[in-house]
Image (tube, rainbow over all chains, first blue to last red; front, side):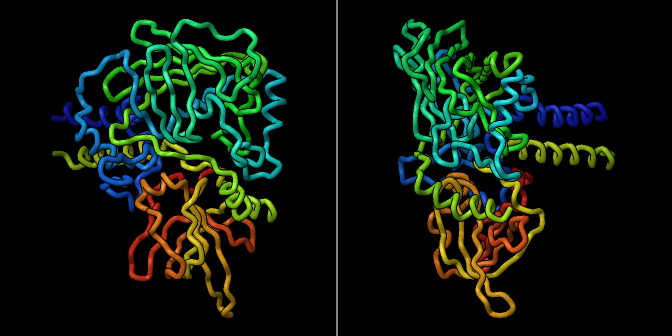
Length: 289
Length: 137
């Protein structure tokens, strides 16, 4: 009996810190609100809820309804609505900056001590890549014969990951917020390589201290690896390389969960809405600091 | 079963839930300008903005002298608030509400981060009392 109890304790703690445990709960990390309903809110019969609208009660119920556990799957089909927390970058393992990177990082520091005043998101600038993926509103893969489309609810936009054999452009005519991306299969892993990113975007806000953001140059390259390990789980690994900013590559690994009960709604960053919010809440805080 | 072992199991389960529920950041924007002190205020809804980036409520509170002070309190995005049980119809101008919130650190500020809203009839509109990182930046 004692051994069984010890196993239960170890299993409980292990689950907490294991990728599986985090994967199941992390997308719903808003925490246990006292008012989260068991019933999903949808636009009507036949419509589904949105990724971020799902709380953990609804997520667990959906997994039973859609029989996700043990469901058959094709590892080369990664289509579906995934996660509502993106894949937050591993800010505990940010590589050391180069001197230039350090200067660029400091330049992102807010003019005021508490709010991220230089963040382009405040004025609805595109988040760019990988910030759109790292951000937390869910995404959808759609697999086509010549490309994989990745749709993002936040910004209601998409990128093309070309799988028709083309190479990344050596000298693209235009840097893009979402860059250029090509993909291929290595066994059961979908490998995506990207370059040509517009350097006006941040890699991510710095979630250790949100008055700064992680910068990049137009030399940034991103290598992504996705592997569907079950019907409901997608392993993801993202490696950012920018030798002008970081002294070594920055890798984030994690898992993203399928949301069988969700479809992408729209989340546009609307300048007039953001302006009103900034004026009434952010700017008010600025004036008084 | 040994009582201490039962307690240990329960403690581990609770710890698991705690750590598993606190792993994500929930806001677009820094919340560092809000203080740690909670404020309870009773007032009348003047505006309910079911909008992004963050849903916010404007409510009028009468101070001891009878003067009306207008507060503005934010929550999270529309979709995050749907997960917490709110809808576009949760509040309307004229509703009497009690708001538990974290006001800005700046003295005299009338901006706040909302934790809980209760209507006059006792209906809890939203309650994030158990969200561990509610006011983290």
